[in-house]
Amino acid sequence: MKFYIGSGLQNAPQVRQLAQLLKDAGWEHTYDWTASLHTPLSLDTLRTLGEREFQGVKDADVVILLSPRGKGTHTEFGMALAWGKKVYLCHGDDSLFRGDGNTSTFYCLPQVHRLVGDTEAIARQVLEG
Image 1 (cartoon, rainbow, N blue to C red):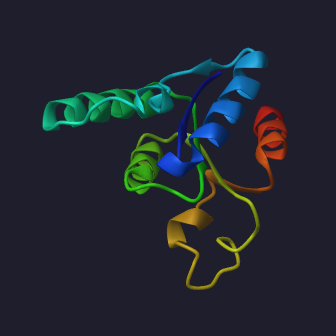
Image 2: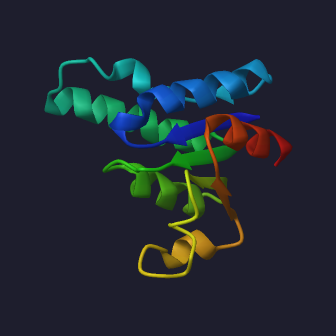
Image 3: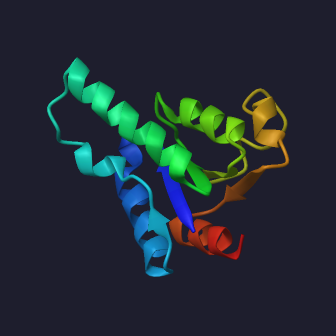
């Protein structure tokens, strides 16, 4: 199974941990954006990174989104939905999934699987998926 993980920059350690758990189970990571965190930024670099992230989402069978999310995470979410990917939306608690002002209508689509828990619990649920 091929996967992509989208999240905010502050979650890079959690992204790496989740990716390793999935890779240990034989899954393939389509693009690890955390490897480029210390790359000096320019418009050319941002374009290249954007192209890699775009292709990573496109090539994935499963798109996992960890919150708190970053600037591009909802873009990755939208691409995943448009391309018919299975999406896991993950949060440490259920505060995004209560049906209030924190809950997007798109979080309620049938192809979006809402997961609550820490990194290891999320990995287990995704692998059981």
